[in-house]
Image (cartoon, rainbow, N blue to C red; front, side):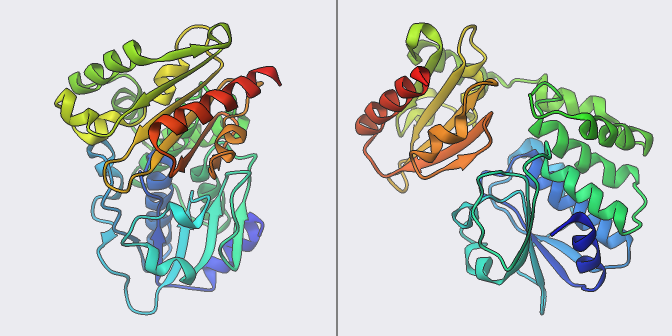
Length: 316
């Protein structure tokens, strides 16, 4: 679908239930909240289905917008979800009922009758914004806050290579609408908790470098959070930290889950390297700059496999 097609599709329907992905970030939640608020401003009924994994720092995005169960006769829409396996457990029963998927992951999987996927968009939130504009929605400060959060999240506050002119014009529209972006930027990009610093110190000590420091990985065993005295959520999101080390071009973290026995992978790369291609070797995907995946291999075997794939990537 085009943005115009999607705008017409939304205009002809009502009673929308919006789904987000597991391990939600600012883009999936920001996209959901933007779409929900925008549709409501146009007189539509819309809500975001409960995502129990929302981190505390992003709770403001869907405050007052979430419902625990779908309303009667809902029209399901997913935002920023690249594959059917990426939903939370409470959302999985409704995956086959999703009527429209809106996403910006280039190597995503089709799992809905209709989809609007634009891999050239820096964030899913920007696609949502375009659709709402096509529908005649007037951007307000309330709508602009989650919109800005979404685009800022997926561009690393405009630092990543996916940032484009449309990103900046959308951000400018958010500010013009009255969004106070300073506290959002500070909370997302300029604030680190003490627990996160503890995890970063552990990761620094246990990171392994390959190919003269151009590639790096860190394997985090199950029980690490308990060992360090931090929350499980504090242990996540370390791939970007490893990639930020001087000289590292491609980085990946392996996080062993004590619940399902899987090892979850998260990769980050600079332009010229492909995090999505690396994670595709483990059944995952995403963007060239940021991607994820998982494997059922034991952690020790997963480490060996990751080392092999990193060395291959460095030779390419």
